[in-house]
Image 1 (cartoon, rainbow, N blue to C red):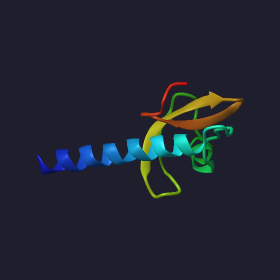
Image 2: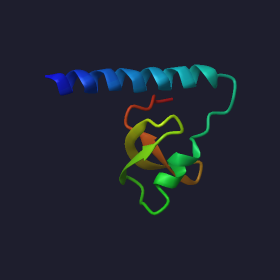
Image 3: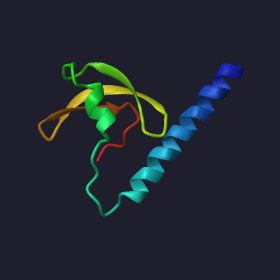
Image 4: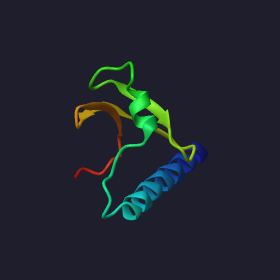
Length: 80
């Protein structure tokens, strides 16, 4: 039960961080961080990866083609 609470709090923190970052980038071109590109450097489209953000958060996602580049897209990324 204790682990479930920790995971829930962590998920809320990551979600809130993503929303804050999205609000801060309104009006500016949104571009994935370098870590998202590095995570997929030796991967194929659809591969699952985990990478660490500049803030030290660990995110999991999958490699997807965006603007002719393979980049890690977090599992909880908003759909534009």
